[in-house]
Length: 93
Image 1 (cartoon, rainbow, N blue to C red):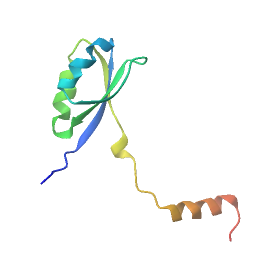
Image 2 (image 1 turned 30 degrees about the vertical axis):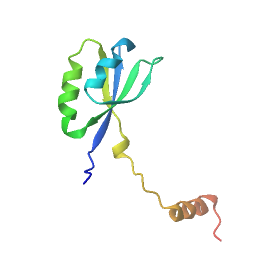
Image 3 (image 1 turned 90 degrees about the vertical axis):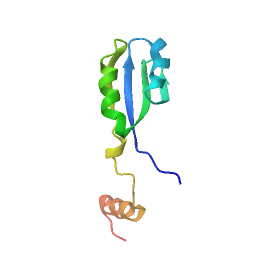
Image 4 (image 1 turned 90 degrees about the horizontal axis):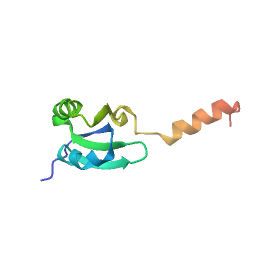
């Protein structure tokens, strides 16, 4: 049976985009921006510390940061939003 693997997104800023292909070894490249010279890389959470430590030693990596998507609440209740809008408008129906 399929088992869900938790992954974390890393933003890796590079000095040159010619090193982008080397990053495929560490995880899945989801997005790359040639203009801003960064790559969004998905890595298994179990390997995250090792990959981040190894990438910081590379000469072509400028900096690394983690994505904050896991910290965001993705569950919204539409009824609560409508109640909040009524109270901010000042009127009660």
